[in-house]
Length: 529
Image (tube, rainbow, N blue to C red; front, side):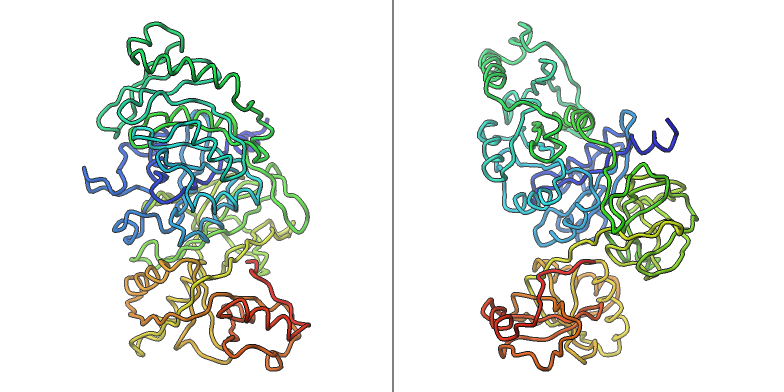
């Protein structure tokens, strides 16, 4: 097998999804700890020390203890090269998560053992289900009082509509959480805590029926375990790898990311069950990840990761071939050849120059302002475009105005750059300038992040006036005369950054009026990047 094929086959690229506070960022850090990428975990919002999670780089993330942007982290473990896409858990940043899931081959769903399936988990699961990507469940926080494990698995099946299969099983919970029973080899991994969870735990492995185990667990937990083993073997869903890889069956593991209990067993199971990079759809059909022709698509743009340099990075998922620093590629949307000179792999604030990368890897390249989300890069001899990434309709709107007219240039540059990242969508009235801009966001917290970033990165203060609009529709007819449209009085005609025409509506009645009174009008709920 050629070195190229070997390199691609050892790649695993996945996103971690969860409701806020389920422990996603902590789990990410512990995976990095096992991969040797970091030496000590910095607990998110930890009181014992002032460290922040290594994957949170933006100042507002450190202050609030939430992930606002998606981080991309790479590490090696047991012969695999693993790319983790850590996504924002907060629902107000779900659009960034949707885009990130487009770059992943599978997803790890983190669920809080005491709370079960929560709102944001449902939303993110739906996006994974739309793409039929495999979902691996890690039920976290078993070191606290948790719901009954059977109840948790039933809840996942009921709420998310996916069957579950327990790969391992918790022994106790809260202070009594002693370890996990591994169903495939009928062994118990007993956890022995070390240094408050900052370092890897010590473990003891023994047969599930070993009498010595009764002394360690106590009579109650030992007999409970024997009953659970019998019940799982008799009534549990059969493990079927094909169904897992189609996204129809979710393997479930239990543990505690904070104390490292069960993290490494989960990682090992995950690597056993996931596949190397998957093919992607393009306008030329399916693209094989083992093809030696380089291709990639941009799924994220981030400006000002380094305030001193005013830089802008385009994150791309390599879908086929091999990347080498300085290579010449064809930028399909820009219709021109470009050289990829400055390429980075990011670990929060630290960056490493990338000399080469393979299908399945995520790299960041310097963006002089030419890339947009959804753009395709390929070899000049084999031109094609990958399927676009959906742009979701904003749900909240506000008029934003720069308070200092002398800073118009910074204001325009700031909102345009943040909009190109996909964090906000900006609209202007037909024929209007950029003095006042209508901003649309998926979640209201994005307005706060916008004001913070404009102040912090561009030294611009804004006034934010909420608008009553609730719905936006893209006009799909190129030839329609907007002046002749029969619309309700509270409907507004606007343009987006790309010059596309849209209508903003205050209510569903306005949408119905527009479609009823203008039979030739074609409206779409979202566009594609």
